[in-house]
Structures are given as structure tokens and as C-alpha cells.
Image (cartoon, rainbow, N blue to C red; front, top):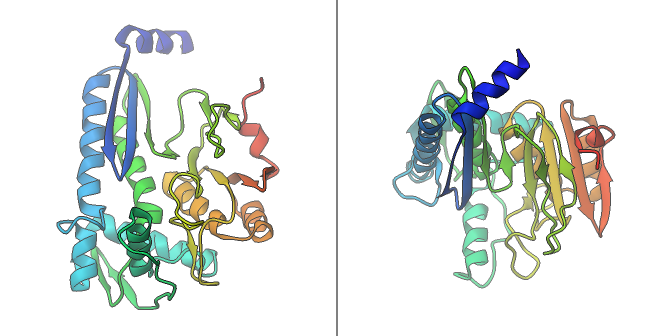
Length: 289
């Protein structure tokens, strides 16, 4: 039966697309029956969701929420609910209430401002069905890209077909070995993963200015990732991997290691001061070479 399925994949070949989405390059690949149509549908899903979730587009549902204080959108509501969960489980380190900080950080990183904001916000956010109300700007970026990868990946599913979606450092379960990029600018990968879990990476090496990047910790009011690189593998979905990669990047090493060790269905690799720190089960997802 396995041989028969593999022959189906081989007969119909590969379909893949690369395109810009969520301020990064998305890659979608499918092998098997109607691969081209599945990849096209996955791309359409990703671009449709980006249009709704991009806080820097005035036409998006997130921008409407931040401007008017209310929006009716099932995707925003799902992401906000997950944000509540992670806020509770990380004791406030993961905090969707910081939309103003997020926008100020992006302006600073682009060079549009000389200093980033240093004061953090509190506010009240409510969800009822698909309706979200807030009295503070929200930052959903720590979840949105993972959510888009998850939804686009669902579009690829089908009988006699397999595939995956990669958006920057976020990826649905890969269909083959993948490399963890080095944060030091060389071509040697840190590790080669062979996993059926979801993957996300975070770190200031991708985009930073004066030691400040997109990562922040509202509980200590600190800006910038504390590690060179964080890679998270999550059994649940890419949205969880995305959220936890951001959270671990914001925490001091000891706190990050403790949180990763106690989180069920999570494995992590943290690069700190050139030293590799892994959870106990991380190496089971690494390809033996």
C-alpha cells in the first residue's frame, strides 16, 4: 500500500509556488493528485487571510478593529481567543494588547522614527462569537502568520496528495528534511530536522536596529530578543509554534528553558551566546547524519 501511494505521488509530480505574503516569502508545495489546483487554492487562502489580518493595511479587519474598537470577523476572533490562552499560560509575556508598541517598533526598524516607544499598554478586549471589541490597539502578529500557514495547509489536504506551507520561519509539518538557518550569516545549517510537527523560528538576526528587533516582553518592559535564535516544534499547530517562538525569544535563558520544558507537545532549540540549549526531546526530531 505504501508503494502504491508513493507511485501516485511520483506519477502526478510536484507543484509549488513562491510569493510575498506577511512581509516574507511564502512557499507552498504539493505532490500528487491535482497538486496545481491545491497549491493555487492554498495561495488564495493565504493572500485572503493576509488581507484581513495585516495590521499595516488600512483595509484589513485588524486595522478596522484598532481604529474603531470593533470588528466582526471569524478569523480575528479565533486569533484573539488563542491570544487570551497564551497570555494566561505565559503570565503575560505573550500579550496581544500591545498594538501600539508593535507599530512603533516596526516604524523604528524601518528607519521612520529615531526612538521606539518604551511604555506599554493595558486594556480590555472581549470576544462574542465573531465579534471582537477592544479599547486598546491589538498586536496579533505573533499569531497571524502561524494561523495563515495552518489554514493554507488545510487547503492542501486531499486523497493521494501531500504538501506543506512555509512562511518565513513558520512551517506546517514538512514532507521531508528541513534545515534550521544559522543566525550568524553562514550557509551551514544549525540542525537538519526530520519531523511531523509544526515549526517556527524567531530571532533578532533577521531584522534589527541598534540591538532592537520585533520582540518585546511587556512584563519587564524590555525590547529585543534575548537569544540569537529560537526554533520551536509544536505538535498542536503552527500558530502555537509561532506564539511560543516569540515568547521564548523574549524571556531570559533560564525562564525560556523552564517554560519550554514544561509545555506539553513542545520542543525547542535556543541559541544563546553561541551555545545550543535544547529540550529533552528535541533531538528525536533531528535527522541522524
